[in-house]
Amino acid sequence: MGRAFVYVILGGGVAAGYAALEFTKRGVPPGELCIISEEPVAPYERPALSKGFLLPESPARLPSFHTCVGANEERLTPKWYKEHGIELVLGTRVKSVDVRRKKLLTATGETISYKILLIATGARALKLEEFGLNGSEAENVCYLRDLADANGLVNAMQSCAGGNAVVIGGGYIGMECAASLAINKINVTMVFPEVHCMARLFTPKIASYYEEYYQSKGIKFTKGTVLSSFEFDSNGKVTAVNLRDGSCLPADLVVVGIGIRPNTSLFEGQLTLEKGGIKVNGKLQTSIDSVYAVGDVAVFPVKLFGETRRLEHVDLARKSAKHAVAAIMEPEKSGEFDYLPFFYSRVFGLSWQFYGDNVGEAVHFGDFSGTTFGAYWISKGHLIGSFLEGGTKEEYEAIATATRLKPLVEDLVELEQQGLNFALTV
Ligand code: FAD
Ligand code: NDP
Image (tube, rainbow, N blue to C red; front, side, top):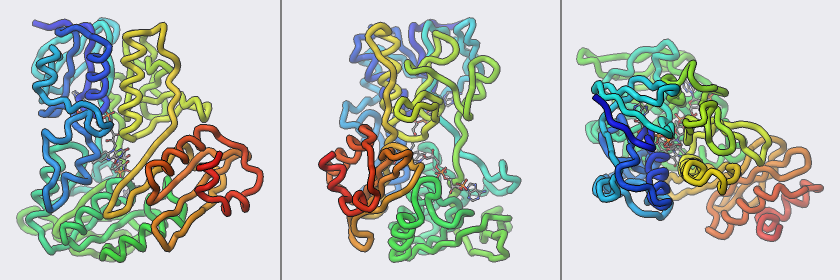
């Protein structure tokens, strides 16, 4: 038994939603497109899960954050997919793919064939067990990747009001969840191995601003160490966290954000993989012509840097999906994907944006004791990355434009003095 479609999107996350919208904009007829997703709901804006979804007052709930509201576009509810003749196969895991025969097999035993496959399988959260630790199954140990995780975290937060939470990991999930927990009046300690938070992006100076801000909200930091084991009660709930430095933190709730792994396993041995993801060209096309890959799972050429990268951010998921659909539907017209990396976060009343790459020398500017400050990264004499906290729409646009231009910077002291004006006048 099986069904056949012209286009199949494998995965039902951010990239899938934006791809579906683009397919309809380009006139794909009803009945030709199918989305298969392990998640039980239509594509939604995943960033909401660590922000609005966790708020104590008027939290965000579906259907309010289905894609594509995050880019101020249409909100695609299940009804929208129906009206556009797009088959949404939800709550269904794809078990295997045969890219030569152009067929997928679902966990429910259905075979689905396609002419063009768009891989949008995203990534999974790394588990503590992968570092040789146990405890992920305890009901008060939470990860955050999908809606089910977010519901679990909300329940766990509600049953530990005023209690103690330990957040493992100082990356995006750690920072955003720690803020949300504090807003929910839970005592938070963040634990991570690096010397400061967001070590892969922030300079020590930028990190210390956020750490001080977090401390002013009552959040504590235990840096330079990792979890060594959990203490459990007789019901299997975690009661405390033992750290490798010998200390022990009481815990009513543990949130783990220690990175992700792209979901590539269906394609191992079938497609070219690189840097942990699926390698694509400037058209987002894999090593097999009829298969495209986008979002967290794709390793694509970043023209601006002259090298391939895998990026784990929502803007890339949206734009790569759009570009891949253009390349599929109008191959002769669509050029090479020319992407400016863009990351952002919002916590408490803070909000930052970053464009480009953070290699080379960092030049800080602005008022680090106030609300607006930033940094530029200069490599081989050119500005290649920009960070700004507390900017206006125009200022963020200016740093984005400046970064894309990669202007020559001869005098770093002058750049520091010019600060934001450099980007505004470049
Ligand atoms: P995903 O959105 O992860 O979607 C993958 C989909 O594929 C899922 O539906 C999954 O169930 C499905 N799938 C996987 N394997 C199979 C299979 N075998 N069969 C069927 N279905 C399958 N980025 C930012 O830039 N800013 C933010 O503020 C931000 N906040 C975030 C907050 C959270 C809590 C998380 C988890 C991520 C956040 N991100 C943020 C990152 C951003 O959400 C991701 O980069 C983006 O979701 C990637 O989109 P994607 O479509 O590639 O993958
Ligand atoms: P990150 O890669 O951002 O951070 C993981 C953090 O965990 C790092 O500080 C890492 O340190 C640390 N770590 C690794 N192993 C251990 C360990 N054994 N014990 C303690 N700490 C450890 O991943 P996240 O889990 O925070 O985020 C998951 C995904 O969600 C990412 O793709 C991210 O982009 C996305 N996301 C993005 C957001 C945004 O863009 N605003 C918001 C929320 C999520 P080290 O660097 O040394 O490995």
